[in-house]
Length: 190
Image 1 (tube, rainbow, N blue to C red):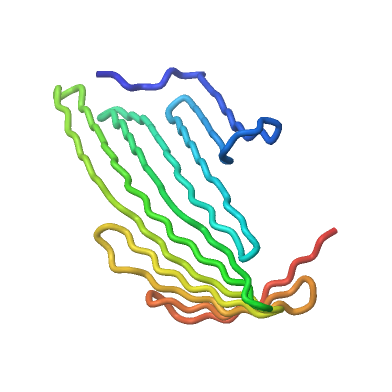
Image 2: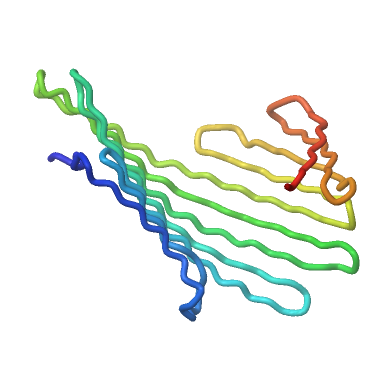
């Protein structure tokens, strides 16, 4: 079974049309190169009321790539399904936001060695979850999240920041996997 991509075939398509009145928002992306392709579909719908908004979303990605050398041909396929929800609300002067996202990826790698007439396959199914919260009040902000990938320990991180003027930001970052850092960002537009 030969899944090789044809040399010289290049393509790219990104579809986001605000002119069409659909019940959902999102986009479709397609990229193709001689040895790889990506198809990505994302859909979301925002529900608003006077207290805030909530946006459920769903997405699908299909990635394929092929490579070869003098010894072996390698074909990779990865398919992912994502679901998530984002929310925002205001409580007086404090703006709150939260998000939850989960994805499941099924990947398969086929390695064929023509000289030995051998073929090997490696399949894997993995999950990734992320839960985040944030709050803003004037120049101050706080964000925290938890990320978990199959086979790994969870990663917890947090950021506390303060805007300085219109273009500067002082920020403290910390996580359970590294040392805390303090940084200052300044943006200049010309």
